[in-house]
Amino acid sequence: MTSLTSQVYSSRRMCSMPQVYSTYEAKSRFSEILRKVRAGQRIIISSRGEEIAEIRPIQSGPSGLGDHFRRLEEKGLVQRGARPARKPGPLMRKPGALKRFLESRD
Image (cartoon, rainbow, N blue to C red; front, side, top):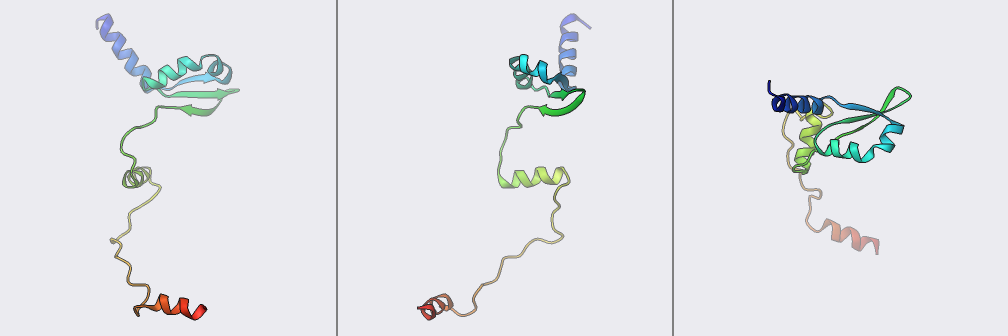
């Protein structure tokens, strides 16, 4: 490998493995951490050897309700129903029921 190829390879490898910073280091190197996150790297913050937080890039893209449910399905948090939902029927069988109800309250 050439030096340029090895640099690209090592930077890609570095982006896939999260780096761990102590809370003290994270405070003093916050700008550096944000640059790394902007470049696509995940950062783990630890306190007394215990991992307590993760800083990662925000996944951009369409954020509609359908996309939200798709992501929840991928995580296994929700499942689709066995059959498609049907349209709800009419709430009142006789036309004007609401009007009659409101008139009866007066």
